[in-house]
Image 1 (cartoon, helix red, strand yellow):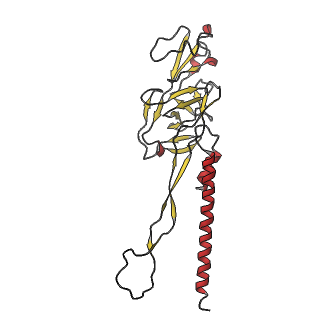
Image 2 (cartoon, helix red, strand yellow):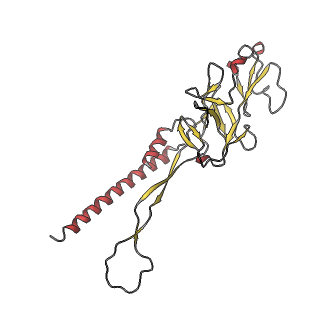
Image 3 (cartoon, helix red, strand yellow):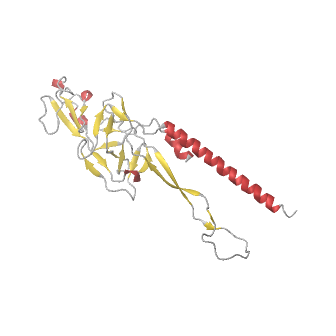
Length: 266
């Protein structure tokens, strides 16, 4: 519990981080050794002693973190359900809520370390045609930029198209960002860098478009903050410390009682 709580506190400023929660269960019980004295009948409930406690599970809380404005055009936050899918160095897919992206030399959106957003966009193919410094990403995940000849055409409030409406003159759609979700996202395994991968217990990923069929909308210029509540973590830290102190004290007390028992013959 102390390890998990310390890790939560350490990641309180990590974008897209999901708080881990610990669960415990008691160990198998055993019958207490009894003195063989005469007695009438058997006890209804034979006395038994517990063997302690063990960690049952560590599961992430998938509650939405607050959205914080960064004013960076490639910072993306998901307001609602869903994950960004990224391509890991080994070619497998990972899933993240951390939308801290930037453009690489090939014009692809990447996380820190060069991990690619899926699908790859190759925006550099348009660098002689559009202004990549004026990219707009709609809540539906559609990526737009004005042509160089019409660099002042794109206006987010007035001219940004919605749905399947015709694009205004001078605007080019460069691609589209999709989202993914799971029936049981708590079963995803973490591999670091706020990236999750499916485990054996994870349901198949469901793909969809932002803002449709229950998927969240994409907010450009925002990042989802960690959902760690510092006051709760400090309370858990104190509880864990007190439990550790109580357990240690009970062992000392048991040792002292055994010492007294063994010295009774003297």
